[in-house]
Amino acid sequence: MGTGQKIAFLGTGKIGEALLSGLLRSGKDPADVLVTTRRPDRAAELTERYGVVVVSNAEAAKLADTLILAVKPQDMGTLLDELAPHVGADRLVISAAAGIPTAWFEERLAAGTPVVRVMPNTPVLVDEGMSVISGGSYAEEVHLERAEAIFRSVGKALRLPESQQDAATALSGSGPAYFYFLVEAMTDAGILLGLPRHVAHDLIVQSAIGASVMLRDSGEHPVKLREAVTSPAGTTIAAIRELENHGVRAALLSALEAARDRSRELASGGK
Ligand SMILES: NC(=O)C1=CN([C@@H]2O[C@H](COP(=O)(O)OP(=O)(O)OC[C@H]3O[C@@H](n4cnc5c(N)ncnc54)[C@H](OP(=O)(O)O)[C@@H]3O)[C@@H](O)[C@H]2O)C=CC1
Ligand SMILES: O=C(O)[C@@H]1CCC=N1
Image (cartoon, rainbow, N blue to C red; front, top):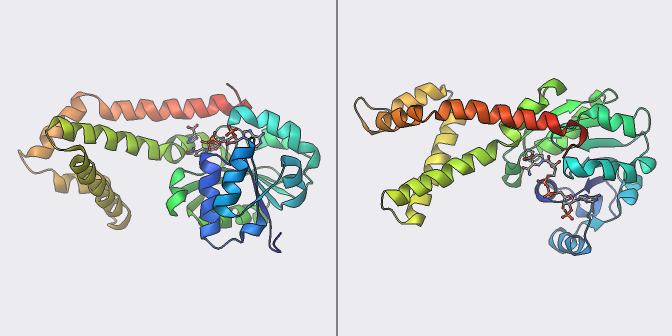
């Protein structure tokens, strides 16, 4: 076991593993990183891949300074039943679960336990994550800074009031999926137009990367950037007319509203 601040991941699935790998990339000693799993084969996989220490949920609560809870909202009740008796109020509990408010955790943990709610996204895997952070009633500046330091090591982190977490979940938590969906659909369009799949894929992926870098670095509004591509009586406006005819803008408004609503439904770890 290492000598630094210990961080435990309770639930090391897709987002837990992505965060874990980023933290190690940023220089955290694997001996200071504890993980818990439900299945022994998964535990063996993580030890072999990262050299981290696999422990039980109760041991994680006793040994780690910071506990990152990354099980599905539906599994959070069972995890808290197991965990709560072992978590001292000197621990920092960070939940990455969609929907579940900090108050839900505070009710189940020892009085005064600091809880921070974070909504990360999978680009933490490439250090380009977007994580939205909100503190619960007992989270002090020092706790928010500790959470920020973890999530800043794998991308950007932004503090928002907890009342905006469900909206943030719809935008940045789920956001990468919408872009993958678009790339998938546009690649299919390339097939329709007669291009080989790998060519269509490469054309679209590089266009997405170029557009993303311009969005981030040019300082221009997205409308300006789109207008610069849209030549009079040209090809782009022909495509934009079809996107508008098919209600793509309205579909996005409804889609993100649905994601926000689903996050609200998960507030009590619902089904
Ligand atoms: N995926 C994403 O992009 C994002 C997810 N989140 C949130 O992160 C959480 C996890 O999501 P995701 O990673 O996608 O889901 P996964 O199902 O991939 O990961 C959850 C993991 O938790 C394990 N687990 C469940 N119960 C326990 C337990 N009691 N003790 C230890 N491990 C347990 C599961 O084990 P088993 O393999 O046996 O099922 C699984 O490996 C959710 O709350 C989600 O809202 C937040 C932001 C982004
Ligand atoms: O789909 C989900 O519920 C999780 C939360 C945000 C991204 N994935």
